[in-house]
Every structure is written in C-alpha cells, then in structure tokens.
Amino acid sequence: MQKKLLAAAVLSAFAGVASAQSANVTLFGTLLGNFEITEANGADTSAAGGSTSSTRGGTISAGGFSANAANQANRTRMNPAGSNFGIRGTEDLGNGLSAWFHLEFATALGAPPPNAGANHGTAPSARNNAVGLRSNTWGTLLLGMWDTPFNQMNGFLNTNNRTGSASTGFQANLLGATTLGYGAVSGQNAASWCGALAAGAPGAMNATCFNHGTNFDRRERGIVQWWSPNWNGFELKASYGTTMDSNAVTASNTLSGRSIKPYTWDLAATYTNGPLGLGVTYAKQKDLLAYSAGLAGGSGVNGTGTGAWSITSGAGAGATYASGSDGRAWRMGGRYSFPMGGGRSLGVGAMWEQLKWTINYSGAASVADLTELKKTAYRLQGNFVTGSHFFGLEYTRANDLKGSIGGTAGNQFNGGGTGARGYILSYNYMMSKRTSVSLYYTAVDNETNANYSGIVFGGIATAAGANPRYYGAYVRHAF
Picture (cartoon, helix red, strand yellow):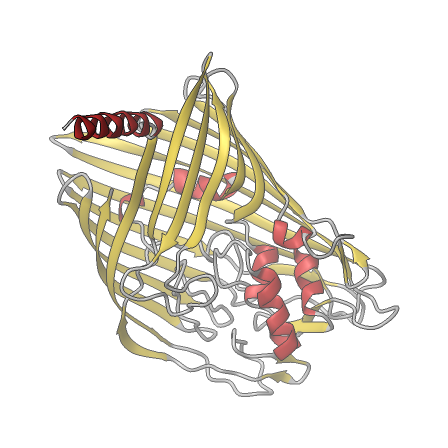
C-alpha cells in the first residue's frame, strides 16, 4: 500500500512539473474540407507557327509556338489546401522580455491539390516556422522561415479573410507575381524544379522556375524579421531573406561559373484605428531572376504570347549570360468597416501594387534578351455582415505586362492582351466561434495572351485566353 501511495505521489509530482513546463505551449490548427466544381473555357486555338498566344505547356520559338490550347472540361474534385496544424509557446524571461517559438505545417484533407508534387502531397509541409525574442520595449525578432512583410500586407488589407481558402485568393498570380509562375510556392524547391525542367526541356522553363525569381508573395526560408511594438496604432516590419535555396548553390556561391549573391529585403508600415486600416510596403529582390535563368542552363526562350524573348543564361565558354537582376515592388491600400448597428456592418477595401524587374547581362544583350519587365495590379473588395452571416465581393485587375528587349533591329516587347480580371463571390456562416461553412464562386477572365489560374494551390493550368471557373463549398474548423 505504501509503495502504491509513493508511486502515486511521484506521478503526481511529475505531472505538475510537466504541466508547468507546457503551460505556455499551445496546439493549434485549421481543418478545411472542400468540394469543388471547376472548368476553363474560351482558350485560344492557334497552332504551331501562329502568333495569337502562348501557353504554359507550349514552347515559344522563332517560328511560332507549339500550342496546347485545350479547354478544361467541367469536373468535380477536392481542393483542401489551407488546412494546417502546429504548436507555439512562450517563456517569460523577466523585465518585459520573453522567448517564443512557432512551428506550423500544412496538410490536406481528402486529397492533395491537382498539382501535387514534392511540396503538396499528403505529407505535411512546412509553413511559418521560427524562434525569437519579444520585448515590450523594442518589439519582436524572429529567425527561421516566415511570410515576408510584403506578403503579410496582402492579408492585412484583405476585408474578406473570413472566407479565405485556396480557391478564394488571388494573391497567387493576379497579385504579387506574373504569368511566368504558377503561384505562391515560396521557391523552396526552385533548384530541383528548375533542374528537372532544364534536363527535360530547357526551353520550357517559364513556369515554376521563373516563379522563384518573380514572385513577391513569398514565405522566405532563412529570414530575419523585426516587428515594432504598437505605437498608438502604428507598426513597422522589416526583414532580410537569405533565400537559402539560392545561396546554397555551392560552397563558393557560384552558379555556372559566375558569382551570384541573391537576397531579399522588405519594409512595411501599417496604421490601425478601430475600423480603419492603412498600409504600405516595399520589397527588393537581388539576383533572384538571374539565378532562376542560370539554373536552367542554355538560352531558355520564353514568352507570354507577345513574341519570342529570352533571358540568356549563357551556355558555353565566353557566352553572354544574365549576370544579375533587380526586382522592386510597392503595395499600398486601406480598409474600413462601417458599423450599421444590430450586429451589421459594411466593409470596403482597396489595394494597389507595382512590380518591376531589371536584368543585366555580362555582354551586349541580344535582340531577344529581356532587360526590363513591369506590371501593375489592383484589388477592390466589399463585404456585408449581419449576425453570423458574411457576404463578400472581390474584383481584381492585373494590367498588361510592359517590358524592354535589348539589342537592335527594332525588336520591341509587346505586352498586349496579357491582362486579366478576377471575381469572387462568397458567403460564410459562423456556426460557432470555431466552425463555419462557406459557399463561393471564383472566376478569372483572361485576355488573349494571359493564362492566370487565379488561385493559390490547385489552379487549373489554363491555356492562353481560357477563363477558369471554380464553384465550391467547404466546412472549416479551427482549434
């Protein structure tokens, strides 16, 4: 009996210690089950040798392109990207200082997205993961992998976060990137993707490979971020990203015999006062586009249906190559919620952005070498809330690409028909603080030479001019 009492006392003591150690550790997550109907009609049908448009699956050549301009037939599927789980915790260090950590992983319920691969299979993949210090005086410092301040601004200015899912977000490509990339995949697998594309088809590297070099909505690996305290509604954020997948090329930090030192840095400022939110952010990317071109090797000829152009990566001794690049982006906007009484409110929001890339070459640029690429886009949002019911409306416009091509012979970049419009209609009903159901309709109207899919993960690989449509419903539970 005494042994049993002693064992019970020891177990009780250990339980108390464990409870104290884990008192500030929290398990969290979001589970999202989705059912969706999708299609894409209106694709261009020009054949090889034509000049109407290109596709993600096609390869631009001097004589035209090999088109894969097939419409995507109506089908049912699941696109459950958006589920996640993780643990986070804090430790009080005294004098207003604390240590904290955050480990978060993405998962999928029902089925992986259609573009499942190394990054989106059924196995969990890393999301925001960091460890840091937090002070009441100087703010928060983190080290690890995290959304950049430029990327975070998209969420800060979003009035329709309540219905957020993989199929109701345009930040993948209409905003934050161009048609050169599939979406917000962070570039964490850029090396393997570009390498595989280069080995199989060097001329068709314009999709996932260039996404690493042109995407500004990034979850950067190897990042240092600082967040200021809240100064009467004003907050600042700054980050420096080592882009580990770029810097880990070789021990000497060279690529195809050239020195390359890619990095990113971001600055953001926000102001919040009750229903009002204002924000502006600036991002810079050094050498990321040149790095992506160098990975593919050779002279990858690419395009957006506007004529043949290339970013020469310089195969062979003495060849001209993209020796460096510079990407810069601005994003700004505001949101406001008008209270109407009786549990009702009307919200509005707007966001504008400008993206620009310049490319330098080791020698004189050829007549087809891209030297500058620019894009502007904006988003308008509105919502109406009454009790547990939420109705959202969103319109996004990606304007035509503009650019410059080096060399002579009057060769000009033609960005005509590369714009697109996106629309989202959504409804959300909160069954409790943690559980909700939603209905949505997401549409993209691509112009003749555009192939935006319009959603973050699982977007249709549209042909040029096709118009993707997504109709769906989901149940979301947070814990």
